[in-house]
Length: 394
Image 1 (cartoon, one colour):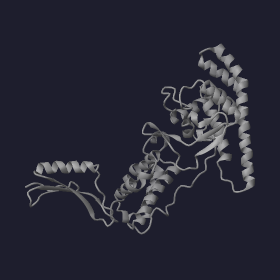
Image 2 (cartoon, rainbow, N blue to C red; image 1 turned 90 degrees about the vertical axis):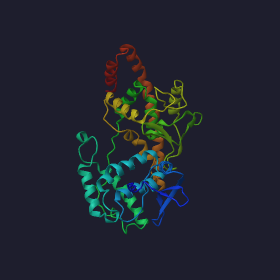
Image 3 (cartoon, one colour; image 1 turned 30 degrees about the vertical axis):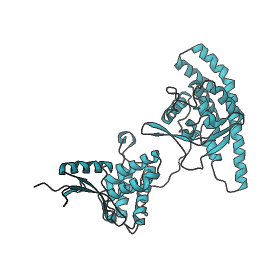
Image 4 (tube, helix red, strand yellow; image 1 turned 180 degrees about the vertical axis):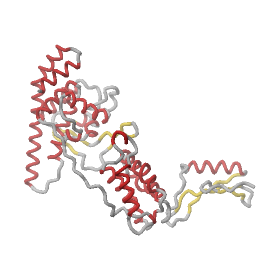
C-alpha cells in the first residue's frame, strides 16, 4: 500500500471519469480557509509530475495559515515577506532580514504567537545586549550595541503591531519593553590646522575634489558618489542632488532617496565651481567621481571610507567618520527652524560655509607650489613625500 503523502506535498486521486487529479494548497484567505490549485492527467505518474511543476511555479513556498496559535517565527517570516519587504529598499531589506532571521526567529521563533509575553521579549533583548553578537565577537565583544538592540526591537514591534491589527493577538507585548537608552554620539570635528593638512594630503592622494565638495556641501557619501556632470550647471553653480549610491549584495545600485526631502538643488561657491571645472578636464566619464578601475562605475562607498582613514592618518589628523567630516556644514543647514531668528542664523552659516570653501581653496593654492617642489625633489619616494607633507602641516 502506498504511503500517505506528507503535509504540504498535495494530494493525488483517481477521478470517476478515469483521469488523475493532483491538488495542492497555495495559500489561505482572510478567514483562514485554504486556497487550492489542481492539475489533471491520464496517468498517475504524469499527474505527480504536473503537480511538482505546479508547486515550483508557486515558488515552492509553503503556504502559511495565519492563526493566533501559529509559531512567532512563522508569523515574523509571513509578516516580512507579505507586508514589509515589498515596500522596503534593498539596503533596508538586508537590515530587516538580519534582525529577523539571525536573531528574532532563532531566539523566539518556537513560541506561539498568542503566548508570547513581554517577559519573553524582555529577556531576549537583555540577552541580545549582553551576548547577542553573531560575528566578530572576538574583536568587538559578545554584547551588541544599544542602537542594534533598539533596531531589532523596532522590527519586532512593527510585526506585532500588524498581528494586533489582524486580530491575532489582543495587545502588543513589545510595547512596554525596557530598552537601552539613546546616547548621543559626540561629533569629532577637524581643527583648522588639521583641515589644512587633510586637504593637502587629499590632493596628494588624488581625492582632493571629492572631499572638498563634501566639506562645502555636507552631502551624504552616497549622494556625492552618485553625482553626474549633467547635475551641475557650471554657469550658475547650481548642483542637483536627487539620487544616491547603495551597495547591495556586492553590487552598487543607484537609487532615489527614501523621501522627497533629500532631493534638493544647492548653489556652489564660485571657488568650488572653479575647482570642479579644472578637475573635469582629466575625467573621461559621465560620472563626477568614477572608479579608477572601471570609469563607467562610481567609486565604492566602502573604498571612500577606507581612503578617508588613510588620508587622516598620513596627515596626522584625528580619526573621524565620514559623517563627522560633513558635520560642520550639516549641523547648520539641515535643521528645521521655528523662528526668523534661527532662519537668519542659518543663512549666516551658509555664507560662512561659502567663505570656508573659498579659504580652503586659496590655502590649497598657496601650498601647492611647495608641494610640487617637494614632489620634484623626492620623486617617487612616497614615504619621504608623506614625511615632508607632515612637516608642512606642522
